[in-house]
Image 1: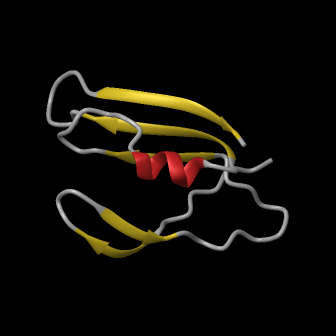
Image 2: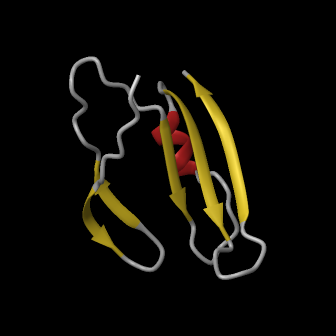
Length: 80
C-alpha cells in the first residue's frame, strides 16, 4: 500500500552498460516497477532485459534519446 524507491548498488558502470546488485526485498514486499535508461540511444528491450523480466510480475520501462527534445520510451507489462 506504500511505494518505496530502493536505490540499486552499482557494481560496474560504463557508457554502454551498468551492472548492479538487485536488492533483497523484505517479506511482504514486491517489485512493482523496473525502469532504466539507454541514455542517448533509442529505447528498446534488449535480450538481457528480456532475460531479466522472465518470471516477474511488474511494469517494465526503458527510456532513451534523453539528449533530445523528444525522448523515446518503451513499456511492457511482465506477467510471468
